[in-house]
Amino acid sequence: KRPLPAHRLRLHIPKVADVVMGHTRMTTQGSESRNYNNHPFYGQVASGGFALAHNGVLRNDHRLQVQNKLPVSGIETDSYVIVQLLEQAGSVDMQTLGKVSEQLIGSFTYTVLDSQARLFIVRGNNPFCLYHFPAQGIYIYASTKEILTAALRKFRKHIPFGSFEEITVKEGEILRISRDGIRKTQTFSLDFLSPLSAYLPLRSVAFDPWNTRSTSYVDELKSVAGAFGYLPEDVDDLLADGFTAEEIE
Image 1 (spheres, rainbow, N blue to C red):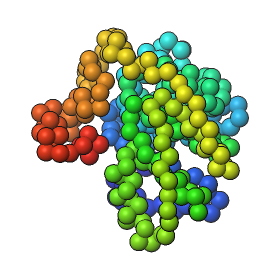
Image 2 (tube, one colour):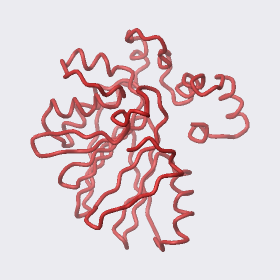
Image 3 (cartoon, rainbow, N blue to C red):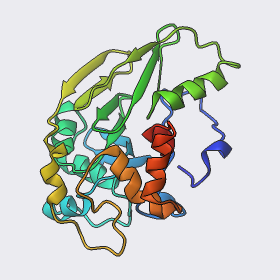
C-alpha cells in the first residue's frame, strides 16, 4: 500500500497469511503520496473487515456518493466509492457485489477479500488473468496474461510451481474462491457499458480526463495520456507498431 515503485517492493509475508494482495496504481485521482488514497482499501461490514483493490476508473463516483448519501471521506480515489457502497449494504456476498457493480459507470475489474478469507473477483470491462496451481493449492492473478507470464518466468527460477490451469472469468461475472478452494460464479448486468452512459453529466472539475463519449479501453488510455506527457496520437502510433493496449498502459 505504500507509495513505492513496484520494482522496489519487498514482501515480508507472515506465516499465518492465506492471501497476499498488491496493487500497482496509475494515478488518476488522489495523490499517491497520501497513503490513504492507495489500494487496497479497507472496509467494515457486519461479518467483519474486508480489503478491496480496483483496476480501472469510475466516472460516476461523485454522483453515487450524492445519490446514496454516503459519508464524506478524505479519500480522494474514485475506487473508494465501491467500499462505501458495500459498507452501506452491510455485507460482502455475491448478491451485494452484483448490485453494487450494476451501479458503476466507467471501467473496472476489482477484487475483494473478506474476513473469512474468501476472495471475490468481480470482472467488469477491464482485463483479468487467473492461474490455478492445483498441486500447491495456489491461485495467482494479474490484470493481463503478459504481466502474469513475465512474473512467473522470473519466479520459477526460485519456486517450482509446476503445471497450472487458466481459470476464465468472463465480463459480467463474479468468481468466489473460498478458503477450501471451492469456486462459485454468478453473473451481473453489463448495462452500465451502454454508450448512453457516456452522455450522463459529470461533475465539474478542472481536469477530468474521463469526459469522453467512448468507454473503450483505448479511448481511456488516450484520455489520460496527457497526464503522463504523451499525446493521444502517440497511443495510435504505439498500437500501429504492434503494442497491445495493456502494454501501453
